[in-house]
Length: 257
Image 1: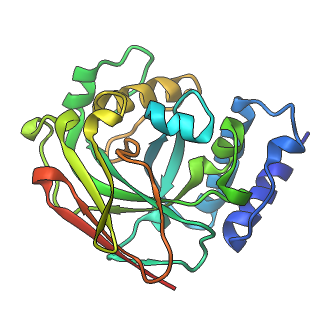
Image 2 (image 1 turned 90 degrees about the horizontal axis):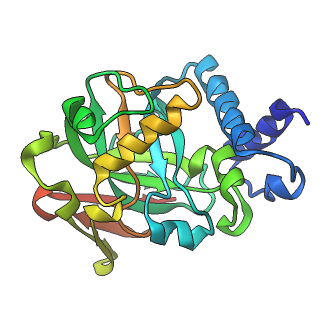
């Protein structure tokens, strides 16, 4: 079994925006370590093509989210410069079945590594926190996958949009921050920061520990998306999304063809 061959297949579907069948149905012996290696191979390909590695995203950080996709642990993916949106328009070009979810993004100013990192160390290494929206888009048919499939597909990473406002870590009790998502003027999702592992900082702690098992770490200047605060909502051309982040302001997206 050649991981580069599997990585090439996934990469082609990421680029062509065509659905594919789950890789685990054809490669049942794949391990989670194999899946992260596939993710790394495809990231390296993007870097060789001129993209830049800017951070990490955590996924499946709530019990409800894990249940909804049939897995039992969080995962991580890699973020690239090309994924960051510069304005409020989400183009469907190159996407299959995109979904939007609200998150908090941590901007780090110190290296974080090791299996014994604490919440206090994460707070001390955090330059600031921003409201954010992540657009996820699994390449698998019907948005159906298991843990290994989704990790190999870079944790469904597609795009992310950061608020212009950045807040010092001690500005709020992030676990209590209320978030409300509106789709075309109607409230469709509500949640609060505690949906992310009880507190979003714990998502960063878990990420550092997961990365350490592969000899990786969070570098200064990196962004960490800590995971969906609510369920992701499926969006289509013409949709308008407004997300209210309690006292932290609003973010808006308009979906275009």
